[in-house]
Image (tube, rainbow, N blue to C red; front, side, top):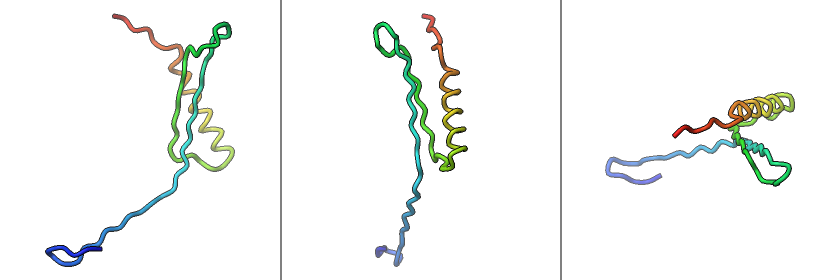
Length: 75
C-alpha cells in the first residue's frame, strides 16, 4: 500500500506452489565410459497421482528418444 499523487494505491502478490520434474537420460559408451548422448526433459506442474506421474515420465522419455540418434549437420 502506498500514497500516490492520485490517492491510495494497492498491490497484491500471489504465490502458487508447483511441482516441477527434471529428467536426464544419458547414453554412455560401454568401452570409454563417456557420455555419447544426453536427453533432458522438464515437466512443469507434475501430476501427483502415481499412475499419471508414470505416464508423464513415459511420455517425456518417448519425446527424448524421438531425437535420438541426433541428426547429422551438413556443412
